[in-house]
Amino acid sequence: MVDTRVNLSGIEISNPVIPASGTFGFGYEFAELYDINILGTFSFKGTTKEPRFGNDTPRIAETPCGMLNSVGLQNPGVEKVISEELPKLKKCFSKPVMANVSGFSVEDYAYTCAKLSQEEQIGWFEINISCPNVHGGGLAFGTSAKNAEAVTKAVKKVADKPVYIKLSPNVTDITEIAKACESAGADGISLINTLLGMRINLKTGKPVLANKTGGFSGPAVKPVALRMVYDCYEAVKIPIIGMGGVASAEDVIEMMLAGAAAVEVGAANLVEPFACKNIIEDLPRVMEKYRIKSLTEIIGGAH
Amino acid sequence: MTQGIYTVILNEEIAPAVFKMELAGDTSALKAPGQFINFKTEGLYLRRPISVCDYQDGRITVIYKVVGEGTEIMSRAMKGNTFDILVGLGNGFDIKKSGEEPVLIGGGVGIPPLYRLCKELIDAGKKVSVILGFNTENEIFYEKEFSELGADVTVTTADGSYGVKGFVTDAMCKIKYDYFYTCGPEPMFRAIESIAQTSGQYSFEERMGCGFGACMGCSCKTKYGSKRICKDGPVLVREEIIW
Image 1 (tube, rainbow over the protein chains, first blue to last red):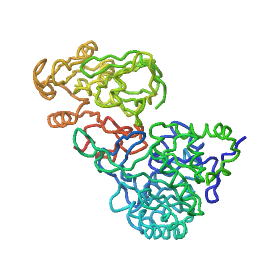
Image 2: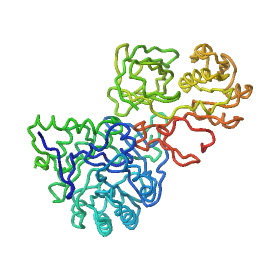
Image 3: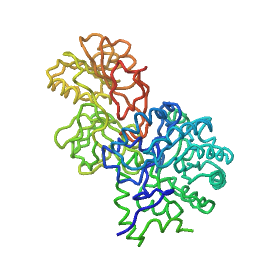
Image 4: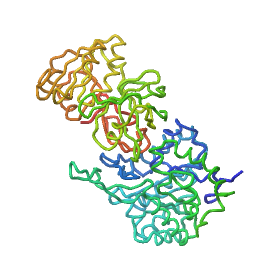
C-alpha cells in the first residue's frame, strides 16, 4: 500500500491533488460527474469584495499545448459566496475547501478574508496577488515584493486559517516575492499563476481576446512552473503548492520532486472533466512504478 | 453530461465545406434539441463544440462547417475512426414554450440544431414553418429533410439564385407565426429581433473553454444576471437578452 497523504499547514489531505481556482467553479459542475470528496481539497473560484462580471468576450484563445484566458475574476462577490455558494457546496463536499481571494487594494483583501475566515468550511486561504487579467489590481500586488508583503501582513492579521499566497510568474525573480511573503508571515505559497500572453487573429489582424492579453496555461507552461517551484523551494522554508500544466500522476510526482507539498491541476479540468479523478486513481500505480512508498517523502527530492 | 468514445459511421460533404457526420455511441445524456457535444481533436488542446442535428438510440448526427483547424481535422475522419466526446451539453430549446404555429429560422450552419427541434415540434402536433437562409444556391442543404418532416419550408438566398431573394427576415415578415426559434449568425439575430412580433428563443455561439460551465469563458450579461452560454445557454429566451 502506498501512502498518498500529505499535510498542508496542519491539515492532512488524503492526496495532494487540488483543482486550481477558476477551473472548478464552486465544485458542483464536477460533483455532477464524480464524487468530489476524493479530492485532497479544491481551490474555489477567485472571490472579491464586490460582485464582478469580468471581461468582455472572447475570453478564451487556444495555443499549442495550452490556452489563454482573460475571464477577469468573474464571481458573485463575497456576500453571495457565503450566503449561496458555500451552502450549495456543503451538500457535495464535506472536506475543508481552499478559499481563493483576490482584491484591488490591501483593504479589499483584508475585508474579504475577514468575512470568509468565519466560515467553518474553509481550511486555507489562497491569496491571489497575481491575476494577469485585471487592470489596476491583482497582478500589481504580485510583481512587487513590497506590495506582496503588505497584502500578506493585512490578510494574516484577519485570517485564522493558514494563508497561502499565490505568486505570479510574470516577474524577474519569483524567489524575491516568495521570500517577502515568507517574512511577512505567509504559511505557504502557491505557484505559478498564468503567464501573460497574447494571440492575434490573422483574419482581423487584431488580438483574439477582447482583453487583448490573457493568462497562458496548460502543458506548455509545465517546465516554467517546475523551474520556479524548484527555485522557490531553495529560497523559502514554508510549504509550496505547485501548479502549471499538471495533467497526469507523473506530473504530480515531478512537481513534488521539484519541491511542491501539494499540487494544483488547472487547465486540464477544462479539457478533461475527469482529469483530477483520473490522476488520483492513477497515483498509486505510478508511485509503485517509481518505488515511492509515501508522497511526503519525495517533496523536494530533486534538490 | 457524459464522456465517451464515439465511432464515425459516416462523414460526407453535403455542401461546400459543410459536412454531415454520424457517430455511434451513448446518447443517453441528450435531453433536448439544440444541445451540443464537445469534440477532442488530435493535436489541439481545447475541445470543439458542435451542435447536435439529430439523435436516436446509439446514434448522433452533427452537421458542421470547416472553419478552422478543429473542423478541418474532423472533416478528414473516416468511417471507423473514433472521437473522445463530451455529450449532452447546454440547455437546448424549450419546446413547451412554443405556440401552435412556430417558425424556425436558421442561417447557414445555424440550421442543423433546428432539425431535431422541428421533429419534436411536429411530433407535438405543431404546425411548423421553417426558413432556411443561405448566401447562394450551391450552399443549400437540408431543404428536403425539413420538408419530409412535414414542415412548410422556405429557402432564402442573399443573391436570389434560389427561393426567396434576400434574407430570412424577407420571408419571416410574410409568414404567420405565434412563436419563433432561431440559430445562426448574430447579424441575422439582430435583423430578426427588429421585426419579430412574438416571443422566441435564440441559440447563441461563443468561444468556449470547457463547454460545461466551469471556466466562465463564455459568460454573457442578460436581464436576469450573468449566464454561461455553454451551461445556462446556448439558448436564451428573447425577453432576457440584452442586445
